[in-house]
Amino acid sequence: MAEYEENEEQLPKGEKEMSFLEHLEEFRWHIIRSLGSIGVFAIVAFILREQIWYHIILAPSRPDFWTYEMFCRLGKLTGAEFFCIDELNFIIQSRRMTAQFTMALVSSFVIGLIVAFPYAFWEFWRFVRPGLYQNEKQLSRGAVFFVTLLFLSGVLFGYFIVSPISINFLTNFTLDDSIMNEIDLNSYVSTVMMLVLACGIMFQLPIVVYFLTKAGIISPEFLKTYRKHAIVVILVLSALITPPDVISQILMCFPLMFLYEISIMVATAIKRKEDRLALEETLE
Picture 1 (cartoon, rainbow, N blue to C red):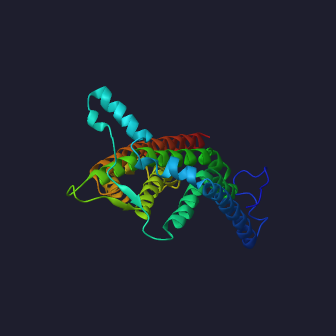
Picture 2 (picture 1 turned 60 degrees about the horizontal axis):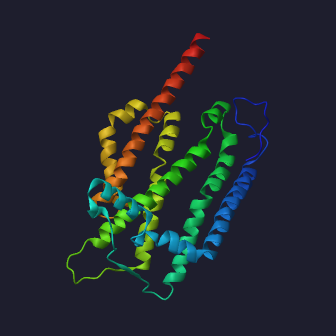
Picture 3 (picture 1 turned 180 degrees about the horizontal axis):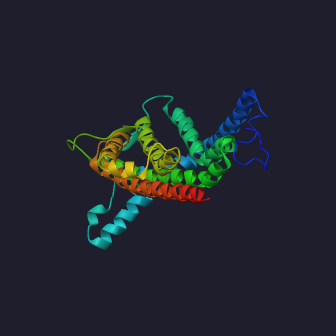
C-alpha cells in the first residue's frame, strides 16, 4: 500500500492515490518479500540440517533433553525421583527411501517459517497499517511486537513443555513388554511440528480478542458470561491438537485458560478507554 501524507488525520491516507490494481501490486511485493525471508531461512536451515536435527528436532527424543533434566532436578528436590527419565522406550526409523530427504525439506521450511515470522508479519502489517484511521493506528501500536512475542512464547512452550511430555508419555505407554516402539520418522516429526505450531497459533488469543473487541463484535461482559463455555471449547481444542493423553491436554489447557483471562482484562481495558473517550466527547 502506498505511503500516505502526514497531514491526513481521520481518513485512511493514500486511498485516492492508488488504484485497486496498484494495491494488488503492492500487496504482491509484500508477499514476495515475506516468502523470500522464509525461503532464505529455510535454505540456511537445510544447509545446517545435521546440527538442527541433532540439537533441536531429535533432542526431545533423548533423555538428556533440557526439559527432562529440569524435571529430574525438580523430582530430586521434592523427593519424587520418578520424574527422572533414564531412557525413552522407542527408536525412530525411516521406512521410505525418500523419507529423510522429504523430512529435511519440510523441517527446513517450518524452521524458516518460525524464524522469519516476525519479519513476515511486519511486512503484512506494513500493508494493512496505512489503511487504518489515525486513532486505529494509535490503538494498534506495538501489534508486531506483541503478535511476535505471543507466537514465539507459544512455540517455545510447545517445544519445551508439551512436546517432550507427550513424547515421554506415548512412547512409555505399553500394552505388553514384547511390543517394541519403532516410530516412523514422519510420525515423530509431524507430531512435534504440529504441537509447536499449534501452540504458537493458540497463543494469539489475546490479540484476536483485542481486535474483535475494537470491532465491537465481543465485549468483556460477553467473555465473562461465556467463560464456562470457553473452558469447554479450550478442552476440546486441547484434545484435538495434542496427542491422546491427559497430561498433554492439561498442559495445553492451563496456558490457554490463563490467556483467556488475560483477554478479558484486555477487553475490559479497551472498553473503559472507549467509554472515557465517549464521555470526553460528550462533555465537549
